[in-house]
Amino acid sequence: MSTAEVKPKKLRCEICARIFETQEMLSYHMSVEHSQDRRPPTGIS
Image 1 (cartoon, one colour):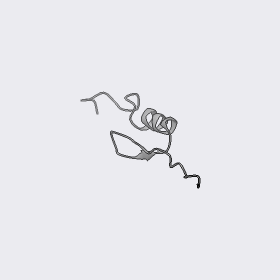
Image 2 (cartoon, rainbow, N blue to C red; image 1 turned 90 degrees about the horizontal axis):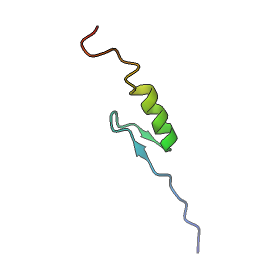
Image 3 (cartoon, helix red, strand yellow; image 1 turned 45 degrees about the vertical axis):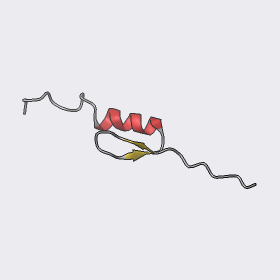
């Protein structure tokens, strides 16, 4: 019997569809790229 290589589960960002290898990478992406702290309030330019 040969040992099957385990492929890592791919995680997709629900906002921009980027794919990440780990939950930690996805969480970091969400905090950096999709955080409301980065964006000005709606209606203010």
